[in-house]
Every structure is written in structure tokens, then in C-alpha cells.
Image (cartoon, rainbow, N blue to C red; front, side):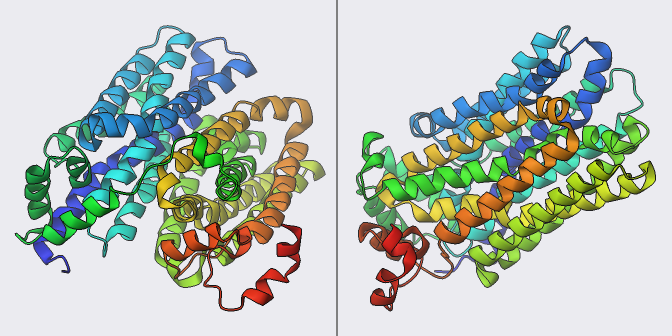
Length: 474
């Protein structure tokens, strides 16, 4: 039964409120790019300390992502979202009123832990309250909200550039979405899937009737009950020989998304622009706002065309564009172009890089990861992929300034370009095209030990596949 207009409006509202967690994710990771320029004016901070201030959120997010699966099952999706909002509020207050650098680190660890849990819980909650006809677009709202949060952080950075204690205001504005999330979640329903899992069938039925604006929800309740009969594998079982290849693929995609340099741009863009010759913090932060705008627009493009153009073409095209952008930055810093020319090259290359990332690795990573894991190991295996992403995010973000000081900007961006080349080769050989293929078919191909490249395709010509060089290599 297709959702009616009233049901759609309610579902859109519920999903939009839950997606505020994604907006907080984007805001609290992006706000540091501008705040860092002013923190170092109020405190004596070394290069290593600046890297710690940036990466403390990511360190907290690593542990939050590890705990997210168990916490969502223990507390429920809605209640945990309320806890997340409280963590965001507490962390923001601690960082905003910090009297010393270590208080900033402590506050941002709180925020990071909330981000790690929220990056799992928010899309899960949206998926579980959405009808299947709307699920894909509504879950993608969370990714779009992240990019909007990043844009908002850049705008706030610029707005508070010339205000005393600017970095405190930059952090403090994060209270607004955090409070809105906590208020909004008070009025939202619990996930019907979680209610069924707790054997609260009557309450789950009432919740679904409200969500779908119909009394006839018995079929959906029955589907949820059947899906919960699938045994969830233990952590040890995700290392079974037939699952190990896709586990490796998920972890590698998390690695690739980070080592190609995206968060050096998101977290350090004003620093990069000042290296390129922007005269002051205000102008470099204003240039960063453009990054936020193109990030949102390119993400909207990805949401609209992923199912039309396919995952692989967008992924491979984006990696080529990212590599060319980084090579352009490296060459510009190497040749020592005059300040005016270098500024325009820096803006052009970073904008093009962000566009290519947003419609490729930015959008595709989580989509492919959600598709390639068999149902019985999906939650645990996705936790490994998420942890990999946060781990390498932390590694890259906590070494960028050190690399800049040791190698210089030209060699640093060249290093990330080389990682793009490696990533293109890996994705070309291993990443499957999953467009238009059921999750059941993908799982069947995995169980048949098909090469990673082919697990997302209906096997029309098994002989041609098994005789391919990749199959022989595997």
C-alpha cells in the first residue's frame, strides 16, 4: 500500500528531525576549520596540539561507532537520539567555555562520541520508520544534512570572524541544532522495528498505524517479525572465509574515503587558503564558504543520479577528478605562482575536488557498504566499515599539519594524489556495480564466492566471469 499525502508529510517531518543529527555531525566537524585560526591566538598551541584539537572529535567518534550497535538495541533508537542530543549539548558547552586547551579537547571528545553513535543511529532510525517506497531518498537526507551542516559551519565561521572570542561563538552556535534535536525527538515515535524486537507488538502496531495513516499494518508487522528471525552473526563469524572478502572491501572503502584527503580540505581549508596567499582569516574563511555550497549541490546531484548512472561510473570518475585537483594544487605550490594566481588555482582545485568527492566517495561509500553485506552480518560488518572510516579520518587529520611542515604543501598534496591513483586501481578491480540488483542476489553471489567485482551483477554468463583474469587472480 503506497503512503498517502498525509502519511508522506508526517514521514518527511520525522525524517527531517532525525536528520538534524547529521546536520550536527557536519557542523561540529566543519566548525573547527575556522575556529582553529582564532584558538591559536588565545592559547599557545603547537602543531601537534592543533592536530589534536581537530582530531579529538574523530577519536571520540571511533569509540562511539563501536558502541553504537549495542546501544541502539539496548536503549532504543528514539531514546538514544535523545542521549546523543544531550552529549552534543554537554560537549558544546564544555568547548565553548573552555579556560584552557585541554577543556576544548575534552568537550570535543564528548561531541565526537555523539557523532560516532549518531552516524549509525540516525540513518537506522529513518530507515526503520520509512515505508520501503521512500526509504532510499529519506535515508539519503542524513548525508545531505551532513553537507548542509558543513556549509552552516563555514557560514558561522565567517559571520563571527571579527567578534571578540570568535571561536567560542563558533562552537556555541552548535547548541541551537542540538537543542532542536532534543526537543524534536521528544515528540517522535520509537522505531516500530525496535518495538517488535522488544515484543511490544501492540505498541508497534499503533506506531505504524500513525506513521502510515492507516489501520491495516498487519502485513508490515508480519514482515518485521520475519526479518527478525534471521540470526545475527557474532563478531567472530564476520571473519568466516565467505564473508572475509566483502568485509575487506568495506574496510578498504572506509580507508580510501579518508586517505584521498577529503578531511584535510574540510578541516583545514582556511589554513590551505592562507598558504595560497589569502591575506587574512576573514577572506580565507569566506572562500571556504564556497566549498560548503558546492558540497551541498554535488551531494544533491549524487542523490538524484546514483540509481540512474550507477555506482562505479560516478566513483571512478570522481577519483580521477580528485586526483587531477590534487595534482593541480601540488603543481601550483611547486612552481611558485604569484600570489594572485595561486589563490585562484587553490580555489578552483579545491572546489573541483569537493565536487568530485561529493558525487563519488562521499555518497557512494555508505550506499555500497549497506548493500554488500549479507543480512545476518550486516550490522556487525557495517560497524567494522564505520570504524575503519573514523580510524583513517583520525590518522589523516592528525598528521596533515605535520606533513605540511615536513614535506611542504606541494609534496603533501602530491602524496594524496598518489593515494587517489591507488584508490582508482583498487576500485576499478574490486568495487562491484550494485545498481538495480536485489540484496538477495548480491548475497547469493557472495555465498557462491564470486569475485568482488561481480557480486553486484546477475550472473547471466558464469563461464565468461569465471574465465576472467580477475576471477583467476582471486
